[in-house]
Structures are given as C-alpha cells and as structure tokens.
Length: 296
Image (tube, rainbow, N blue to C red; front, top):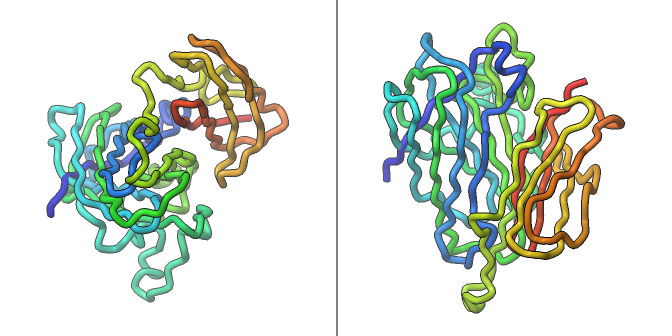
C-alpha cells in the first residue's frame, strides 16, 4: 500500500532559538483494545523555509512489538506544498543514524545507543514518498495508522522522532548547534497508551475527553522557571511529572486531588542543566505529554 509524504528541513534562525522543536503536539488515544486500529496525529512545524533542497521527511515511531504500520497521510498548511502519503522507509532509519561511510561499510551504530528502548518496544520508520519545498512556519498534520492484532497487553510509553532523511542526523538529536548545515532532529517521548484485552467491557475503555487539555509551558525556552497550565473536566487525582530525555522522572510537580477546571503550576529548573525535558500529565481520563527546553 502506498502512503503519503511530508518533508521537513530547518534553517537555523533566531526563530529556532525561541522555538527549537519540530513537534508541536502529539494526539493519540490513551487506551485501545488489542486488535483495534491505533491512530496517532503528529502536528509538526517546519519552523523555517526550505527553498534550496527538496528533502524527504522521516518519522520514527517507538511502539509495542507486534504492531504493524498500515497507512499514513499528511496535510500541509502551505498551499504550494502538496499533501501526500507516507511509506515504510526501506533503510529502516539507517540513513539518519549513520554517516554515508558507515552505511556503505555496513557499520552503523544502534539507535538504542542514543535513545533508551524497552525490551517490549520496537521502532518503525516511515518516509515521505517525494521531496518538496515549503515556507517558514509550514504546519504538517501527519496521521499514522497501525494494526495491533498481535499486540501485547499493558501500558506502553510511545515515542516519536522526526527529521530530514539525510546522513547522520542523529548527531543533532534535540540540539540547535548544527550551524554549518542547520538541520535538527526532534523527539517526543513518554506518550502513554494502555492496550487492554479485547474481551474487556467497552465501559472500561477510557478515552481523553475533548476538554482534557495540557497547554504548552510558558515561557519556552525558559530559565529558570516556567508555568504549566492544564484543564480537567471533573474532580480527580492528577499527577504532573518532569522527565529527562532518557525517560527518567526527575521531579514530581504534583500528585494530588484537583477540582474540575483550569489549574496552573510552576516548575523551577534551577538545579537542572540546560536541555530538553518532558512534562506528563496523568489523570483518570488518560495521559498527555509535551516538551519544554531549559536554557541557561
């Protein structure tokens, strides 16, 4: 089956310094039955225009072993950049992990050396079927569908990675220091999903209500403090935790009962080093995560 494409390349400008992320948000269900189609929507921002090279975009998805990619589409906010399909990457992500010399010598490093992978998870890489050009601040809505017929049961932390499909892009993982060739590689981790038995009652399947919301922290990047706002539609226990790039909890910002409505919490990063962090909100309705950048 052929699937649609999107194309991502970045030019390093002052704007990237302010918003050094490609992933604007990740939208996925908090719970599915094994055998049910899993659909995730990735909202990706090109940040800067690309007028010199028509690159293919690539997305890697860290998912439970047994899931199979079925189809994918993207739609662009730039009228000059066509919408398209995603296809399985025949190189399985090796091009962005290796240098050209390593690739030709069959001596590529492992992605596991860069990003910790649980034993019950695996990566699938999908690639745009064409390269193209686009304007600054072009938004791409990428929809990916997976078959979960052979899925294990349990709670899983989904991960996503995106960049341009060119040599050695893992050298620029979550960094904006690639001055000579200003591209970057972005990740979004700790996106939780529960896979339940298909025999479970549908009354027990929890989904995130439309009003369940976690805002982007402000300011972002920040030093040393930033505000995190969220909304819950009903009273209940809420936890808000901060994770480092390796998925380790470094700080518990809240774990308490909250009344329905809007809430705001402040995270102080005084004792932490500069870098990318994730904050994950968990409620009885599910979990949602976002990324923030501490710059000192």
